[in-house]
Structure formats: C-alpha cells, structure tokens
Amino acid sequence: MALVCVPLLALLLNMWSGKTAEEVLRFKYGYTVLVYVAAIPGIFALTLGVYLFLFERQSVWQMNLITQVLPVITMAATLWIIRQKIPFQYVPGFGKLSGFLTLIAALMGILFFLDRLHFYAFTYVPFVYLVAGFVGLLLVIRFAWSQLF
Image 1 (cartoon, one colour):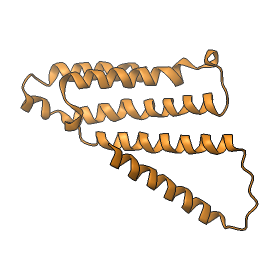
Image 2 (cartoon, one colour):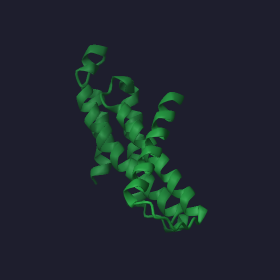
Image 3 (cartoon, helix red, strand yellow):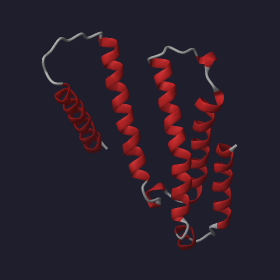
Image 4 (cartoon, helix red, strand yellow):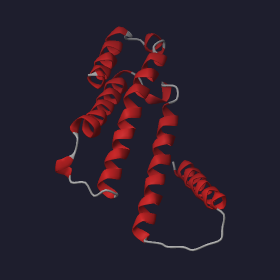
C-alpha cells in the first residue's frame, strides 16, 4: 500500500510546487525524500531479482509481484513523475544513488563471475587480506566507472 502512495505523493507535490523555477526549487528536499523512498526499495528489488535469476536460477513464473515487481514499477513511476517537474541535477543526493547502484552492479558482476568460475583455492593467505583485496577491487571499479562517465 505504501509503495502505491509514493507516486501519488510525487504527483501531489508536482501540482503543489508551482510553475516557476524558484517555486519548484523550494520543494527540492521534498523531491529528495520521494526519490529516496522510491529508489531504495526499487534498487533492492532489482538486486533481489538479479540474485534470484542468476544465482538461485528462479523461474520467471515464480516471481513474487509484490516484492520483485511493484517496487521497480513504483521507482520508475515516481522518478518519471518527478522528472517532469525538476531535473535530477537539482535533487540533492541523486548522484549518490547512481553511485550506490554502480557499486551493487559491480559487486553482483564480480560475485556472478566467481560463482561461474568454480574456483577452489587452498591458500595460507589470511582472510583479512582477501577482504581487503575485494574492497580494493570494488574501489578500482568505482573509480573506473566515475572516469568513464
């Protein structure tokens, strides 16, 4: 029920915020809250869907519409409604969401590669070094992504 209300709140905020740029920019923090309220469950649902399809090999017919589809539709509808009124460059913190999504996509790509590799290693390297190497690899991917775009 709450996920259905988020696009409706975005629509109400669009009607209430006014017509001129100054009036719209006064409500940029309201738009920020709506973007985060819609995007966090949407990103989680996308990640869950990718995980279930790639790692658990779940069929499309077994999808749970409430947890896997509705948050993505809510996110898309809310972002589309907000985009009609204000460019995303004026929404504070919107770039952080794209960075978060990039980090999750890189992590899922690395984990999928390691899952398909069937790599078995017997090593005396402490686990802390492996975790540090993994975090370093994520930082390199993040830096490369930021340089690319």
